[in-house]
View 1: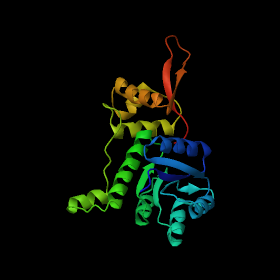
View 2: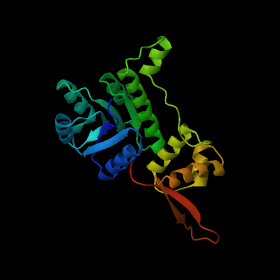
View 3: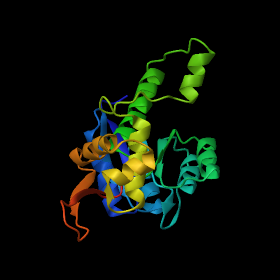
View 4: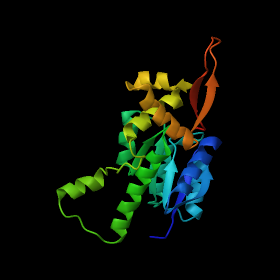
Length: 226
């Protein structure tokens, strides 16, 4: 395996595409070598360049992401694919698994979510290329259904962080109190997650004025699409 895994981002939203490029380039062992905004462009790049992994959106202006994968396989291209999409239908997830999509990441997501998935992918790929063998059925099951080791900051839970990201992606402007009410946690706990995203430049802090006396509230909005 080369020192750096070469990644192609396939995403028609320019803001989201640049966010995904930034995420990939932050990951040790990975480099983004290009962005394709259409299915046709993605297939063209794949036919001309050495790509190790495709981060693939499902909803492209000239076709569905799964059709891109089917066309790749028909042409003999076995490049690995990670779906990065807002498509939540069970049928879409099942269809992706049937044609060999190795990971399925729902938008919006925190950087740590993509980091964990791609790190797990890289570990599995290294093991395969080193010729390692499985010891038992449990190890087979882990390979087929890899569990990621959370690398979120100490004291934060990955599942809760993803839930906060989803909330921010669904509506602009959330206070810690509002997020706490949705999560069923304390305001302090909700604020820790929001502050983490703000520190990572994934959420923007602004002031909310309600026209009443008293101090304004801090509200958080999702930065870019990712």
